[in-house]
Amino acid sequence: MSATAVRRVVPEDVPALVELVYDLAEYEKARHECTLTAEQLRTALFGPSPALFAHVATVGTEVAGCAIWFLNYSTWDGVHGIYLEDLFVKPQARGTGLGKALIAALAEEAVRNGYSRVSWSVLTWNTPSIEFYESLGAAVQDDWVGYRLSGDALTALAGSR
Image (spheres, rainbow, N blue to C red):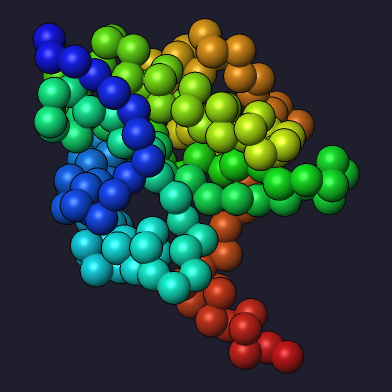
């Protein structure tokens, strides 16, 4: 296998990043829900006020994986944290350490900047990912249940005041 590396995303990576997002959506059986465009992602990552960040893992010159993330804030800790929105490594590159290297890059980012944690969600059926995350020392948050407000419910609530 060619040399591997993990680095911050650059504008030229956006098309490959969009492809990886769609590959992840396919893996999660939700490709029909993904509407991301390269323009949207480019603006989010490199626009005037970027609030989204990413690292890519490369094998040779090919982008083979990504970690897309943003900052959150812990009011209890009084510092930022990193929320990992998407982690994906192409199937042919799995088992090579790229996933661990991507999360390690986020851990380095957190420690360097004084952030208190890196957190993320995983689908309950995604056993390979759950086992991978636990092998890194990540702890499942059994006491928490995730919620999402979107679509008609979001619109209705926004208009309720």
